[in-house]
Image 1 (tube, rainbow, N blue to C red):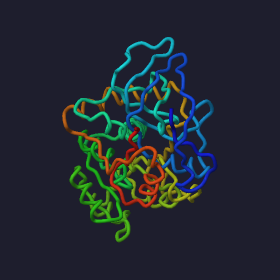
Image 2 (image 1 turned 90 degrees about the horizontal axis):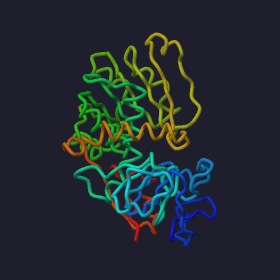
Image 3 (image 1 turned 90 degrees about the vertical axis):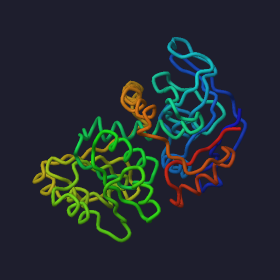
Length: 326
């Protein structure tokens, strides 16, 4: 088979479409013939040499895919060769075939095209686990999503609205904010021109955001805590604004607030399987009902993953960028 390899870390040109051995499913694993994968920020970090796959995972980039079951490993039940699926991966999605632990496999949601289903596993699992399982967003509460037009952001907006929350987003252009509004966002903040702390305070009559989903890390840490409501919850899922920041513990204490930080890739298989099962139970029906849909900016050939990485690094896209296998 062919896969994207990274002989040496570097820029997008470091991604090489090469012939590699076919993977073989082991105990509890499923072999998937890949139709499409999607680009995530973690893939860019891996390409740059900053984010190695966890031990035992495929060395090829790609944290999600869609495709068809090609073979079942020993001990796998509930799936059959030919099933159309999508999957959460620890690596290996940028390839024609990938081995997946059976607990990280999902059927393609009703009403979703097989190719576009590749845009779903990472974002749905990240949003559901952080916003709902950890931060416990409730109906009528206010959620602030940084990077509202991103893959994570567009899914967070849709899920929060479907479950009855009020949603605020930050984004850097009018086009991106307008798209967030089409998805249901109630409060639109241009972070290049507006102070999100002041805008959240104004829009909530001084109450603040009950939950904040943050991809910036250090750069926004103190301001995020300022923007929280009493008993608010800050969920950090990225470090695009740096890894080390100062936190005013006094403000945190006065608000009786909580800060959580999670990653998905290196979690134990059991934890991932539990998240995937929760997504299948709670999120998948929303696709069938039409309340939620994948947001795909464009599709590019998997062999041209370098071009896809350039698109994501330039941040001009909305939603996900897909890589389509031959």
